[in-house]
Figure 1 (cartoon, rainbow, N blue to C red):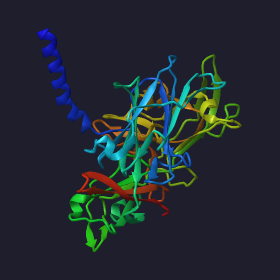
Figure 2: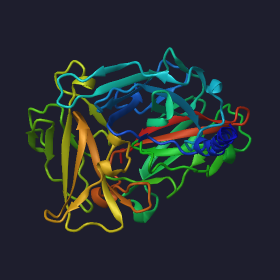
Figure 3: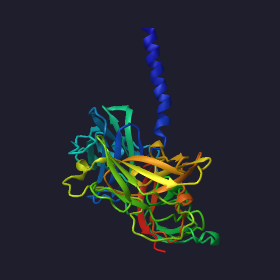
Figure 4: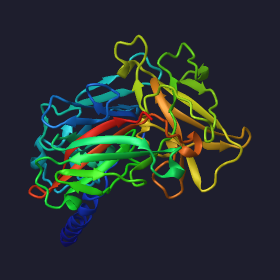
Length: 423
C-alpha cells in the first residue's frame, strides 16, 4: 500500500515539474501521427487566404486534414491561446474561450472513387461549441481519444483587432550591395487610442514573407516615435531575399499531362506523376510569370466535392546537380507543407544520374513549390541557393502588431496589414 502511495506522489510531482516546460514551449505547425496528410487551415472565405480572422466578426477559420490509416480513429481538438512568440499564454481557458476545450471532430466523410482510401476531417471556428473571446495567436491541437499524450497535429491561426493602423512600403534594399536581390519592408504603426506606457516593452511586431514562419522577422523596435506613430525604417533588419517566382504543377486531372508533367504511370495502388527535371536558377536572369506565392489549392476537375474525390498521387521531382552539397540538405517546400523541413520533403542525391530527387505523396490540385537550402543546425530555409534572388520578384508581405495588455497580461493582436511587392 505504501509503495503505491509513494509511486502516486512521485508521478504527481513529476507532472507538476514538467508541466511548466510543456506550457512554455513554442507551438508549431506540426504533424505527429503517420498517415495524416493535407492539413489545411485558412480563412473560410477563400482557400488561398491565410488562417487569420477578425475578432467578433462573421469570419471563420476552416481547418481540415485527411487520415490515410486503415483503422478509424476518434479525434478531439483543443484551442490554446499563445503569446507573440507562440508560447502558451498565461490566460485561463475561460478568459479566452466560451465552451468546452475538448471537443470531438464530428464532421468527417470518406473518400469517393479514389485509389487511396482516406477519411476527411474538418471543422470551422468559431462554432456552436467554441466561441473565441480575445485576439492573439492560437493553436488547434488535435489528439486521439481524449488523450493529450497521443498528439496528432498542431496548427497555428490568428485572430486580430483593428486598433492599430499600419502603412507598408516595400522597396529595393537600401544597402547598395544588396539592391539587386533583396527587398526592404518599411512601415509605420499608428497605435491610436491604445494606452501604451513603454512602446519598446509593450509593442511587438512580426514581419512575414509569403506566410513563412521559418524566416519571419521578430523583435523589431521602432526607430522613431512621433506622437502615436511608430516608424520602422531600417536598412537590413527588415529585409528579405526577394527569391524567385515559385515553380508550379497542375494535377487536377490525371487523364491529361499539363506542361510540367513528363509522364503519368498508374499501378494497382496509386498514380505516379513524374515532373520534368527542374533547373538550378541561382544565376539565371529574372523572368516573370504568374504564381500564387507558394500557396496551393486542393481541387479535381469536374468534381462535386474535391475534398473527398481528389485522389492521392506520388509526385517525383528531379533537380540535376553536379555534386551533393556539404553540411546542408535540400528540401521542396511551400504552403502545402507549411515550409517545414523533414524527411518527407527532403531530396536525396542520386550519384548515377547526378541529380537530387524526391518523391512526395500529394493530393490532387494545383501546387506552388520551391527548392530550399537548409544549413545544418539552422531552422530557416534559404531560397536563393537554388532559386536565385531578385528584387523584382512579386511577394506577399504581412505585418502583425502585438500589444502586451498590462491589465490582462496577454499579447493582443491589435492590427495587421498585407502588402504586395511590385518593384
